Length: 122
Image (cartoon, rainbow, N blue to C red):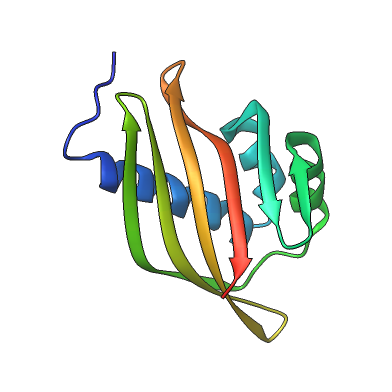
């Protein structure tokens, strides 16, 4: 059984970076198919979308070219869950966007999984 330790901020931030790296490599759909819980949601400007729509959107989207995570913070929710919140700066097609993001992670089956992800324009 994995216990939340002082390493939790580093572990969850690493999970967040893994998602971004997959998106940059054009494998966002594949990554989130594996990483999201069955009933996961993504909250974006103007919509709440389910896991299948998230996977389809990332599979069809052009990869991002770069990203940066700024001001990361962690909220512990229990012994097997936490939220990573941060400001992201990402570039695609020459356009740079700044977002406020949070991802809720749950631990189960030997891995961390995305239960909810929110992104809001900064």
